[in-house]
Amino acid sequence: MIDVYLRPLQIEDAETSYLWRNDPEIWLLTGYQPSGTTTIDSERDWLISVLKNKNEKRFAICLKDSNQYIGNVQLTDIESQRAQFHIFIGEKKYWGQGIATTATELIIKYGFNVLKLNEIYLYVNRNNYPAIKVYNRCGFNSDSEKNDQICMVLRNG
Image (tube, rainbow, N blue to C red):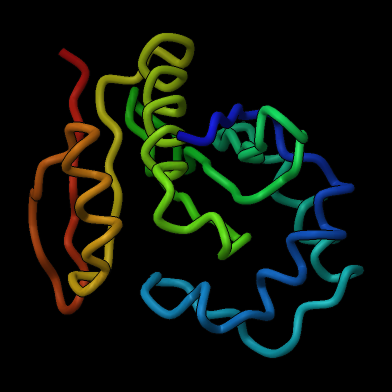
């Protein structure tokens, strides 16, 4: 098992994350598709903008042994003790190694214990079987379906 930790996302992370935004394989099964090419500057500008949002908590997923930044996990749309969950592992060589499960568990603890959320929800492509498996393992349950997306919910307590 590869140990990871979360740290607040930083503007300097743009130097790595812009590469991930330009890899269509990473976005294949997500609800997000970047439009056009992302540059370091456009990624940096985007980070500067989103890191100001008070209703979002964005974190880098890092390897404990090397501090390498390998992905993002975040809680967005934080309102009325609810938040939307997002995750991706940008470094594809770490796919399928349990990192998403660990990072999801860490952000859930943060959301419920620090932010005092009552509910965390997410949307996942119905064909993204590895992600659905992770979310089920972490306690999320299917709530509804619309088009190709499944809404999953985890309630505190």
